[in-house]
Image 1 (cartoon, rainbow, N blue to C red):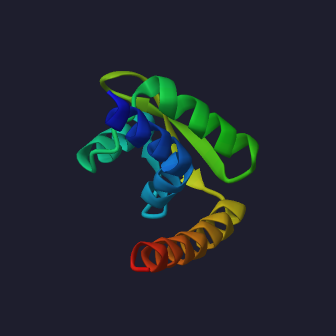
Image 2 (image 1 turned 135 degrees about the vertical axis):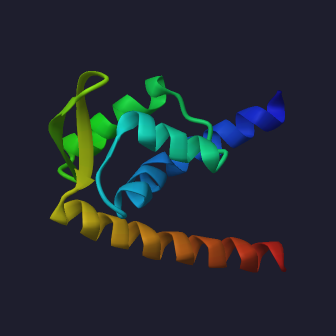
Amino acid sequence: MKDENIKTQMRKGVIDYCVMSILKNGEAYAPSIISKLQQAQMIVVEGTLYPTLSRLKNAGYLTYRWEESTQGPPRKYYSLTKEGKEYLRILDDAWVEMVEQINAIRNC
């Protein structure tokens, strides 16, 4: 149980980065984002994703549009804003730097 808690806490720390990385390839709706995260074994449920999307939208990093669906209610498609693309570039740089730092520490 302790191992899973550690992994959960680490995933929480990078969920914004993962969501934005998915959206760099184009717009997507929440179930599609969840599916991609789950395929990468970043286990995320709707209760985690929707607050993340809302927080990123409120920060100005995401926008969305509604699209009618032939299979149910309209779908909300999210995409990166100009500010979101810049923020993702900063996150990319920070990630590379952090991985290098961690590897340096691990190899001491």
